[in-house]
Image 1: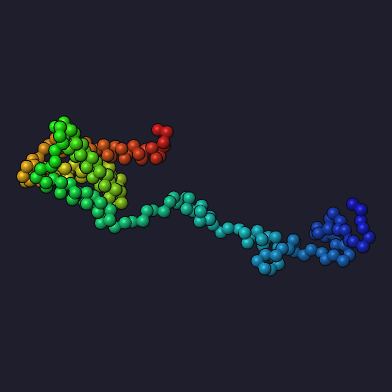
Image 2 (image 1 turned 45 degrees about the vertical axis):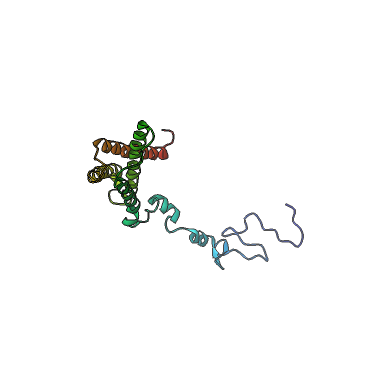
Length: 196
C-alpha cells in the first residue's frame, strides 16, 4: 500500500505485544478497550457482562410446561349441572307432557329428548369434575352420576300423577350419557392427532 506523506500508517504487526508503536501513536495497554456501560473496559469485560448466570425465563417456562390452570370455585363449576338437574326435575314434575300428533313421533321425541337431556347432563358433570381432584376419572364418573340421577328422576315420577317410572327410560338416559362421553373422548383424540 502506498504511504502518503504526513500520514502515519500502522504496520501489520502494530498492536501486538512487544512490538513498538509508530511515533505519535499510543501503544495499546491491557488489550482492546471498549466502552462498556458508560465506562471504558476490556473485551473480556464485555464478554463477562453478556454472560448469563442461568437459563432464560422462556427456556425455564418451556421446560416446566404451561402454567397450571387457575383454580375456580366448586360452586361455579357445579352451578351449570345443578341448574340442568333442576330443569329435568321441573319437567318430570309435570302431570302430563304435550303429545305429538302421531304416536311414533311422540315416542321418538320423548325418548330422544331423554337421551339428549342426559347427554348434556353428563357433559356438565364432566366439566365440573375436571376442575376437581377426580379429573383423572372424570368421564366414567360423569356417566355414572348421570345414570344415578336418571334413577332418582324415575323414582320421582312415581309420585307425580299421570307419570310412572320406566326402566327403559333409565337405559335411554344412560345411553345418552355414554354417547356424550364417547364423543368427548373422540374430540380429545382429534385435538391431539387430527389424522387418527
